Amino acid sequence: MDFELTGEQRTLMQTVKSFVDHRVEPRMREIEIENRIPDEIFAEAAALGLYGISIPEEYGGSGLSRLERTLVHQMLGRSGFGFAGALASHTGIGSDALVSIGSPEQKQRYLPRMASGALRAAFALTESEAGSDAGGIRTVARKKGDRYVINGVKRFISGGARAGLITVVARTNADQSARQFSVFLVEPSFPGFRVGEVYETMGSRGHPIVELVFEDCEVPEENRLGPEGDGWLAAMKTLNEGRPLVAARCVGACERLIEISTEYARSRRQFQRALGDFQAIQFMLADMAMRTEAARWLTYHAAVEADSGQLRPQTVSIAKLFASEALAFVADAALQIQGGTGYIADNPVGRFYRDARVTRIYEGTSEIQRMIIGRALLRA
Ligand SMILES: Cc1cc2nc3c(=O)[nH]c(=O)nc-3n(C[C@H](O)[C@H](O)[C@H](O)COP(=O)(O)OP(=O)(O)OC[C@H]3O[C@@H](n4cnc5c(N)ncnc54)[C@H](O)[C@@H]3O)c2cc1C
Image (cartoon, rainbow, N blue to C red; front, side, top):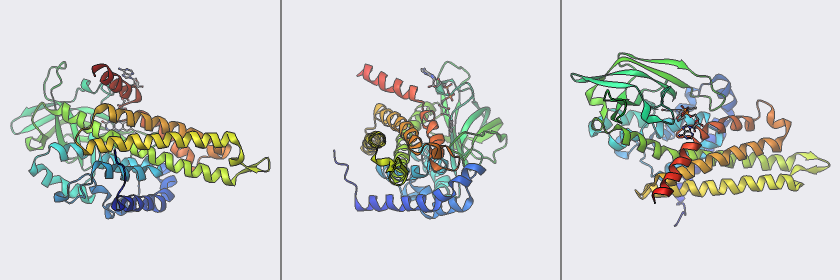
């Protein structure tokens, strides 16, 4: 398998890296405290075309390949998950279903504005009774004339408060035992929609997760994505395709943490020597590098498989599981290398440590990834 990157792909990475390192990272402490990303950062991201990476060229995006999107997300991960998460919802789970199963009319109506960043996207599946067991959702959409009436409450929805378009998964049958789900494109201006609780989180701050409330929310029939009852497959495909991007952001975060840690190990002196002279510190750096390198190749492998149209769920789960656990190890070791300095609130390592935790929870917990891998092995 050939993973050689082209000159164009390297330039793409360099452009995003430069933006993240010089424009985003210096604002991350402020973003973390205020739990809000400044509009000018979003505007700069839009000017760079970052909103359009998942959107085909005919609708104003750059239509990047899966590998190229992976490279962009890897670079976004260099500032942790606050800002990266905002773009991730938009260019991953928020837009994937519309791009893959939307009608030409639906795409024309929404994608150009999504590509320019004028319209931000979110994805709403999780409910209080349906987390890992997504099949347990209770939000119901009932057909009434030329519209659907949606009732239910979604929770923990990334960027839901500032989204202009939300892909919502709802049950279109009354019988709780059958998975007859459909997917809808909901605009916040639709009657009966409102944002509920805004959650404070320990990490990934900047694009808060929120509750979305649907009370007799009226959605025109033309906003149903794909045929009625086919929503389960669409939702699972969306999650499956989003997971390699989570892995990519983990890899980028690990790479940044290794840079910070090696710099610190060179400059900090104890016992009249640089910390990096001690074998204990070298071993920590080596273990960080080993896990990061393995995570990077597993992630690229998933991206290449996706580009070939042969993406297997277990490839995705292995990449997401390994990369998120690698980041947990790397963030912990990076903090240990800095000792008390790492524990001071405005040290970026602490932010990465807090952000890292969620990657083993969202888009399928580590336990769910292990279940997918185990079942695939047993089926083979
Ligand atoms: C920051 C953040 C952003 C999010 N963004 C979104 C979003 O944009 N859109 C969206 O729809 N959702 C989003 N989520 C929700 C997220 O996907 C869920 O939190 C996740 O799927 C887990 O569901 P849960 O929290 O209900 O935990 P539960 O499903 O209740 O799981 C609790 C624990 O039990 C374990 N567990 C559950 N079932 C099993 C089993 N069968 N075997 C072994 N262990 C099991 C889990 O692994 C976990 O450790 C977000 C969550 C967070 C924290």
